[in-house]
Structure formats: C-alpha cells, structure tokens
Length: 459
Ligand SMILES: Cc1cc2nc3c(=O)[nH]c(=O)nc-3n(C[C@H](O)[C@H](O)[C@H](O)COP(=O)(O)OP(=O)(O)OC[C@H]3O[C@@H](n4cnc5c(N)ncnc54)[C@H](O)[C@@H]3O)c2cc1C
Image (spheres, rainbow, N blue to C red):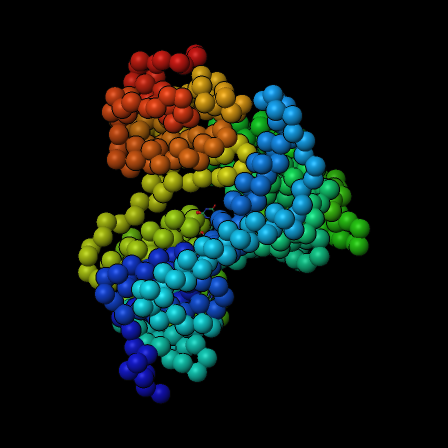
C-alpha cells in the first residue's frame, strides 16, 4: 500500500512524552510538518505518573511536616490527618491544568496529533490502526516503564510508583524496594504522611549514582526522620495476604508491611514496536544513538528514556529540541550528559551537576574539594535544615561538580549548572554577589572559601 500524500510529514514522532512533545513543538516552530503519535495521554510519564504528581505529593508532605513541627517555630498548629482523597484532588488538579495547557500548545502549533498505538513498518513508516504515516524523519520517543524483579509480581499490596500515586489512604507500614531517586522520594512522602518506612537497597548506599558525601548525609537525615535504611541488603522475595505483605531478605530476615513499593528502576519501552525489524539497533531494549541522537538508520532518531543515560524529563526536552533543530539543519551543539542537572526531591533535597569527586579524580587526576556547611547559612538556619554544598574542582582549574543537600536545595541547581557548564573558576563565582539571606548564598560562600577568602565558613 502506498502512503497517502496527506499522511506524509517532515517529522513523525512516536510517543508524546517529554522527549516526543518537545521535539514536536520545536519542529513546528521551525516550520516542519509534524505528526505526533501517542497511545496514552499527551505529556507521558512525567506529567501523568512521574515528575509532576510526585512533586505535588512531596509538597503536600512538606505541608504535613510544617504543621507537625510548627511548635518549633512558635506556632501552635496540629496535624489532624492526611486526607488522601484531598491530596489526590490537589495533585490531579495540578496535572489536569498542565495537561490542558499542553494540549492547547500542541493544537496551536498545528501539530497533527494522532491518538493510538503506533509501530514501525520499516524505518520511515508508522502504522496506527488503519493509518500509515510516513516521515522523511522519524523520532522514537516511546519512554520507559517501571521494572520489577524476577518472580515479583505487581498487584494488590505490591505496587510500583504508578499505583502508589493514587492511594486512597496512608499505609501504616511501607517497605520501599530500591534506594534510588524514585525510592527515596516515595520513602520521604510516606514518612511525612505518617507511615513507618523501611528502604531496602542492595547497593552499599542510597542514591548510589550521586557523590558519596550526599548519600551519607541523606542516610543520616533519613535516620533522624526515623526512616529505616537497609543498605547492602538483598531482597529475596515477597508474599501477600489480605492483611499484609511479607518481604524476605537474603539474610533470612523478614519484614511485614501494608505496602511494598517496587522502585528498582525503569526499562525502555521498545518491545514489539518494529524497531529491530526496521533495522534499528536495539541494545538490551535501549536504542543507542550517536551524539547527534541519530540511530544507526539514516533519518531515524531517538530521544528520552529509551536512549541510554540519565532518565530525566529535562534531558528528554533538551534532546527533543536538539533533534528538531538537527532535522531543520541548524547544527545544534551536542548535549553533554554530565552537564545535565539532577535533583532528587526528598527531604532533604539533593541537587547535583557535573562530576562526582570519584569521577573527577578518574578524569582529571588531582582535584580540590570544599564542603560548605549550611550551618553557616542564615536562611538554612531559619528553615531549620542541615546539609552542605560540596564543590569539586580540577586542581587549579574550573569547577567540574557541584553537589548539594538540604531543604529546598533543588532551587539552587540553576546557578550550579551555569557554573559547571560555563566552566567557571571559584574566583569567577566568588566575585559575584549573592543575596542575603538566601540559601543561594551558600553556593556563593562555598566559592568564596575555595577561592581562599571564606566568610561564614566554619572549619
Ligand atoms: C515516579 C517518577 C518520578 C519522576 N520524577 C522526575 C523528576 O522529578 N524530574 C525528572 O526530570 N524526571 C522525573 N522522572 C522521569 C521522567 O518522567 C522521564 O525521564 C520522562 O518522562 C521521559 O520522557 P520520554 O519522553 O522519554 O518518555 P515518557 O514520558 O515515558 O513518554 C513516552 C510516551 O510514549 C507513549 N508510547 C509508548 N509506546 C507507544 C506506542 N507504541 N505508540 C504511541 N505512543 C506510545 C507513552 O504512552 C508515553 O506517553 C520521574 C519518573 C517517575 C516514574
């Protein structure tokens, strides 16, 4: 069957999540004709079951903590209860408004939005139901799914982040399997809502991809919050009854809980979509690309979570924009993976960009580091938070890594990423004036100290 001329586009995008819709919007801005194929909801994981709803829960959690701890600040409030239907209504309201806004953007950009599950039939044709859509360029953006472990079936009291986002009650006891970003964010939410929480992590530390100093501080803070962290502990199995779920560990120990949250990572959604049949290299489910995000097949690109690397929404946005500009012939500058900022929104928050100290030692040999303790930062003291800003510098050279922990420190990542990506030296940043009293000052003070002129720095 030959393609209908009306179904021929400059760009056909499979998947309308962060990577796919960003590519569609930028392609349309550049005057390209675009079809965007989406089988679920426009906005994908991030908007509907990822970044946005989890951060809404974390904000509700912050409010619960503020009420619970109000007396510390001389305010007498009491936390009555956490009303999950109310929390969910707030969260769904946020998601709903953003979804509507996004739908409006796509419509206004005259993108042909195609609802339905698509699959490749050759490298330049996407089939959706009876429709065959051809593109001079095809962008694969089918995203990721929550993985489980062999033999661990999701259902009932055993759930992934997706089901945990719409609980109608606060469980008394929760086991979180996996101490990565998603695991520690949910552990933090559940604890703030009043659950007893145990995190089980096979690796020796929580958030193992981060600088080791951040993991240590997070574990200390979680211990203070009475979140039990079992690191270096291997999960053996789980069984459930009407009343409870029992989690067994390889050590022979068992933990009884009301809910087991499985947060062991996300796998790429590429199976059965015709990628390999179209000649596209698929490696353990992921689609490898070159630095210009091209696959091994001409005119076929991949963006977002299916491309090996950080699974973050803003990486997907940036990659989508990059591919649109590449197709339009603008020769965009390749995205440097280590320059992508990373924020984990648990309490305390973690924010980092660039190389960890260990990575910097590997790449640069000699490095200098400095840890500025938030104890010297006025605003952090006002908020009652602890933590630090750690800088990693190639000896005598630029800052190559910034690692921060403490309440609200995610908001400091903007300046940190400019510092790392613009290869600033501590002396450059030390010359910039940071407003007082802000947590942002901690970043400024860390650079002052590393430049040899500390102000409120306690040794
Ligand atoms: C609980 C959780 C919290 C997170 N928090 C953050 C955060 O705070 N910050 C952050 O940066 N990232 C966060 N992430 C990660 C972020 O959501 C992902 O990195 C991002 O959504 C990836 O975008 P994507 O476009 O690659 O894929 P997705 O957003 O998964 O989109 C893929 C889309 O493709 C569609 N699709 C799949 N197959 C087909 C098909 N055959 N036909 C048509 N459509 C198809 C899907 O329906 C989906 O809409 C979080 C993820 C989770 C799960």
